[in-house]
Length: 447
Image (cartoon, rainbow, N blue to C red; front, side, top):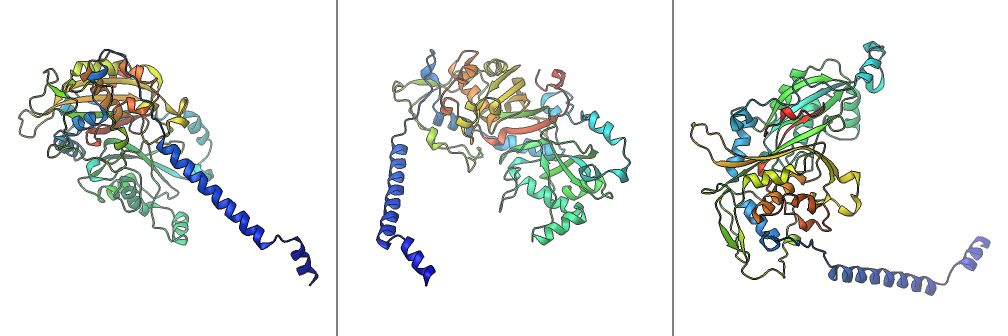
């Protein structure tokens, strides 16, 4: 009874508690209303182009429609043939191409020298495990990207299910106790988006089992998705090897198909207020996470009926891209799905070794003339999310508008990502290879 009396003496009246609760509810309600008002009154600061071709640039909607209204199915088919080994990049460019992983030597001699002092039975911890380097080739249109996601057909999910056979007993028991499927863990050099293909994607897998052979891993993965996913090679590497952190550079190739009659030199114009909402059959599909509605804002200062060019010079695209070579720059304006406000400085800095564009023809199986395409090669130490696709679309937009050579460099100082064009379709993008030694300019595909 004494305890109940003390509690009653110190307790607040019920009316006071109810009043405080109502005040808290009113406070949170006012915060929500304030947030909604701020969202409605938010002013987007657009990049103010001040050069002579200000009104010749495509709007975001025009750029998007120009990029997607193309015969992408022919590019997708070419990538599929390369993945299956029916064609090669050498047939596209007419020269012998050597990929970076061939005879690549991982520079970890310090780690290896330490390992030489111990026999296999003396090794413990992570040094006792066996690490395999797996080189993969896959068709992007057949998967929902690399990263494993529930309910989606991803490359990582397929590979890790295939590697479950080689998991050691301890790991297998842990997964069983947690009621999780028996899967291995694959670490990758770079995650590709939905629709993006890869010829030499690098991933690694480690296990404490000593009886696993490279050809067994190759057979297990190859049997998971024939015609869509293929193992190029499997090799045992140093325990210190990491596909992402050990990489020195990555190489991407973007193939942009030209419509019939286009050659990059003819002058064809269209009105800025014309509508091009209908895509040609077989054109690229918009990926689910690309939010383009916010970017479709028409410049009110643009004179009505402005005639904008719809063609561009490949040489001009090449000149614009070459300005990026050999420079450490922040590419936050060319990134997507990341917060630009928190990506200041090193997190957005990339060093581009090589950036070139040229015109080619897709090889045909019947030895006829294939479709004209523009090939863009980009090599850098790292790439931000959708950075390659935005760079491709923006460089084509600037080339069509007749911008100056340093147009892409000037966009680095923009205060809004709408200064750059929407990402180009993923159908044309391919991760060619990943390098683990210093980049050799002689290994460039496009000179």
